[in-house]
Image (cartoon, rainbow, N blue to C red; front, side, top):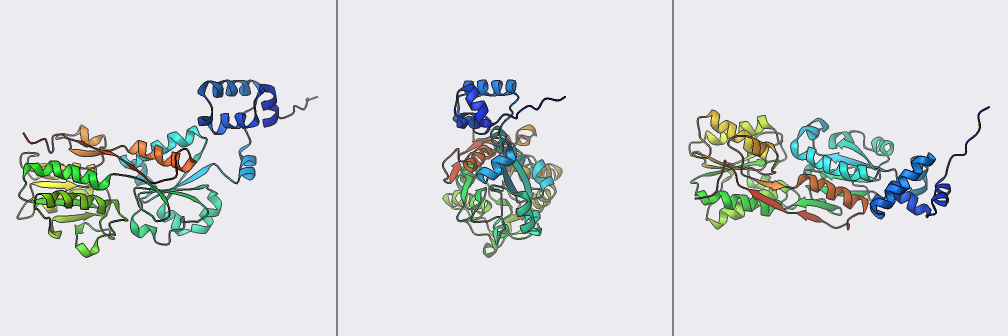
Length: 353
């Protein structure tokens, strides 16, 4: 005959260990509230008793929270998981959410928009972290719900708390550095400057709102550095690359380097674009940096591992993910955060001797 064993409750465990129920709950769900030693002792004793934490379903009913955060990505999931910058950002978030027993539900913006209501109801998320959204993706966005916790990253959406980097000042710093080589002609290879899926040149009136787009912030950072040297870059020398994609970036670079007045400097809005530009230049018989200076933005590992290596602005992408998760969980104050960037000088645009 099998003996019925009473399932331990949170109160039972708290009584046995002579601590409060809140302390037991924090040991499983809010480790930041306890010292590491106390938490380890509690978890060890709980394991000996066969108690493995409060029931998730019961906790959801009691608190109205599911322990799931929706991560809304501006690009396809397959792209976001392989793109170095997006991948680092997701890694940083995962570190924080795993430590606090939160799950991430990855969604592309297209998926959310296709069947918004059913997905919102089925996912039962506590809120959203919206990553890298372009202005046209934020019009009537279904995840902009007043009763949900929403953090935006690498974008600016009114009424939400945002986590961004120094896009304008970062672009200014790297352009200021590159312009010390006194190029006679400059071209800008921009990223998602226009609402189009084509590689094309830019007209001023077509640009996204400066306050809404990180790419426009970078563009005006370049413009500021150029203006200090009494230089301008006309629309004929500014390219829109719709996606941070090697093939599209290579196409834009070849177009720029095929101009009659070939640029001696390419200001690239990502390291991916800069790497493609260096390869295009080499294939066209140009030497970098002897014939052409190239600078990037992001500081991905590949930018340091190719030859010539890429001069870039390094952003702390993994840390950006951690910060976004901490703001979402209330571990940081719910206010806008802007993270610093760092100029990394390498072979593609060295210091002026």
